[in-house]
Image 1 (spheres, rainbow, N blue to C red):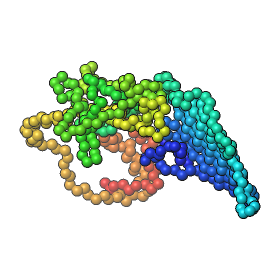
Image 2 (tube, rainbow, N blue to C red):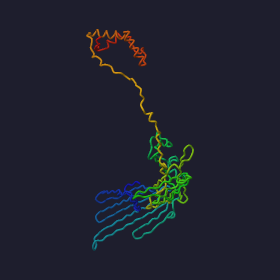
Image 3 (tube, helix red, strand yellow):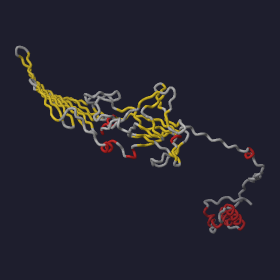
Image 4 (cartoon, rainbow, N blue to C red):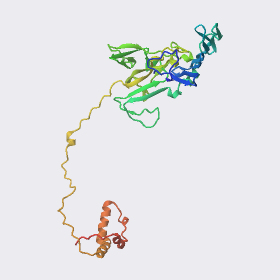
Length: 422
């Protein structure tokens, strides 16, 4: 529902609708002429309503003239119908002194009421000294013609693959991609799936036909909980639980008013099938009905819903909440031979302690001698043999280390490092 400036004067505002003041204006054109008025527009579940009221007044001494216009209309769609009223009046008055204060006034006006289709209406003409009515068009009781199912479906329903949906509300562990047919991976202990249909239903089939015209529920204070359907019989048929404190409530009876289909001839079935490895397993789950209020302009019985009638068809069946019928049975931990957990009396020599190494003592060599010592040691046969052994232990080929430029390696040091004293 959306509104700007309020509602039609004949519209009884529901408690949950906002109370909105009229959009008003007041224009003082000059000292003699003033124009004021108000306007509104509102869109509800079934109709568009709008109106405009204008009042112009002119005063000049003892002479006064006025002009009033008011228009209010309501338009419904699918099927299209309309109803509008208009009023216009023009008057003048003059005040003068003659054997006291005297007033002369004259006013003419007209009221128009039109409706359709077919275009019809009635006009009331008031000429102050005489008034009369003029009727035109068809019968005032004529109802709009129903639209076709194809037109209703194209105008108000989503595509076929979006009319029914299923979503996880609990227990979802992970899901990849946006494929609607892939619900994801669930925790089997506490998952909840909820089906939803844009079209309300008056019957249901899950393994067998379910009785959904009257549903059992329990109540704790203001909390109302519908009872689930589950397999309580040996043949796996689903029935609704009926504890001693259960009460019953009637579900809403949807129709398709714009198409002219009444509730007693409409059959809309909410069906659920669950299979595993090609076999039906609906009996392994519980199904709690989901009831919603749906717009009476779409799913009510009337072609032209009453302006001040109910706004919704209450408690219609639109889906089910699916949960495991029984909690998953936890597995048992396999016994383990305690002897398998005992340690093996095997001594593993991973390393051995060595005495504390002596402190480093540098050889008293000058800068040039240290560089020469470094260059010669890189190609020393003993060092080359040790390098080969180390590379082999590490799985690295010794040829991967290039020491052919040993004479220039030492020159790359900014300061030649100290050399251990032999």
